[in-house]
Image (cartoon, protein in one colour):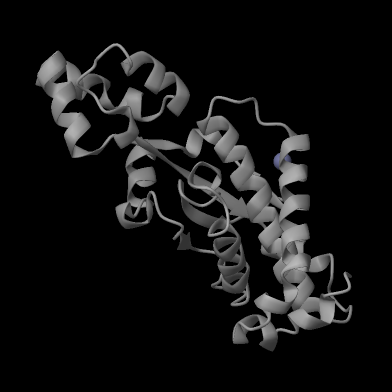
Length: 219
Ligand SMILES: [Zn+2]
């Protein structure tokens, strides 16, 4: 049987780590979910590097559990990278390193960095963590189904859920206790940005096509 960690690694596309790109697994059943991810990416581009939400998100995955979204820190994997791995093998010996590698890959990033701080040869900035966030597309759409501008509002809802779950992921990465208050505040800030920048956003033909300008006054 395949180990859970093997499965987890197969979910990681190294090329998306440390970028605002993610593996989109939510658009298969609702292609406009792609627009929601793009909207969060646009927002991310306005944020300072340490506040970018999608940098350490590898995958946005579908969810059937009846909640808007879910983030589970056990789905995190630390990516140490070849340089750090090589230095670890030199420092501890290849056998010891290989024995503990998997353990280190699943420690909270803040804990891992704290433990490695005593080894000056290791560049902690090279270590990244990769998180998966889960979004229940139907649950997000249901909130607006049958209403005018349902697609635009569903896109905004899905994007807000991504912001919410990515905020939890970022808190865990930074060693902060993730609270609902912080995630809800991040959602609010994101929505404020959307409404404040509506005129610019609808220059994007995709957002215009789904009727974003029609929700400028709010739902
Ligand atoms: Zn939450």
